[in-house]
Amino acid sequence: RSKQRSISAPRLSHTSTLPPAPRRPYARKMRSLSAAALVLLGAAAPPSGFAAAFVPANTFTPRSASPASVLGMATEIDDKTEVREYFNNEGFNRWNKIYSESDEVNNVQLDIRNGHDQTIQKILGWIEDDGDISGKSVCDCGCGVGSLAIPLAQMGAKISASDISDAMASEAAERAKSMGISNAKFYTSDLESVTGKYDTVTCVDVAIHYPTEKMSEMVGHLCSLANDRVLISFAPKTWYYSALKKVGELFPGPSKTTRAYLHEEEVVRDALRKAGFEVAREEMTATNFYFSRLLEAKRVA
Image 1 (cartoon, rainbow, N blue to C red):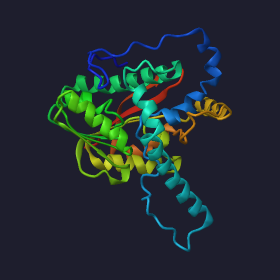
Image 2: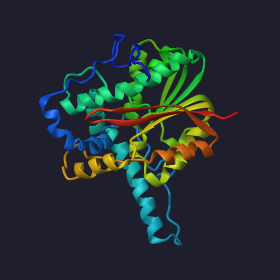
Image 3: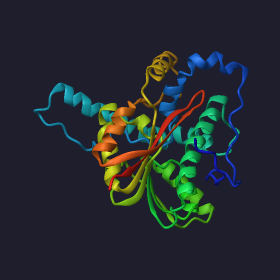
Image 4: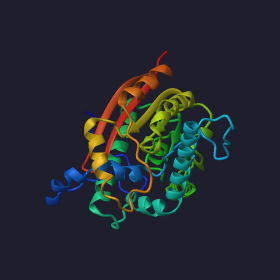
């Protein structure tokens, strides 16, 4: 199991990770509602999301299209617009606080902050163990406020990071600038528009916003950008997490702003294999309100 590392995170000036969220008496009572876990995670996944990234905003509907296909296209476009608008407005204000040292967070948000930080630190730990990231190119799809991209830049990687939210990409750029980082570029883009070739491609906690039926295509596109390695995390679809999600849907609230999608792990692994990649390392992070499966896949020679 990977050990937590002391690589600086972009929201902090110190060089240690946040301590685990303290367990509180009400935690067990809320376990059945952690629930909210997946639904909240839908709006809580890092501010990036590429729902329906393969459907351009100006897509037109052919006259011959079936009602089902028209509905599917509309849903995908709505997902993408929903995610972009949310993380450019209310979502930006909320998640910028979560991915910072702000005290203006509740216990659920603090738990998610810690869970996400654990996933980031596992990735940084793997890369630090490899010891070969300096000078290598990294494409971070769905970079949010730079939680992963900035520490990788500090390790010497050449970063190209994008997010569907202009507010998030701009915040990441500001954080990098304030830390004197010059080897990272941040820009606004959805997944379909990301092009080029990179040694490593990362996509952390973005799939929660991505429609299930498009997951394989999304993974394939990420692999097409990578020369050597792809790192991807997602909320796994298991009977337990699916049940939590259904229960959570019974408790409407302001956090239920974007759709939350769970993904079968075998579907993700199969898409990686078809693209010529094999899973080399894997991890699972689970707190009360954060669930994320992390896979590192390397291109098969």
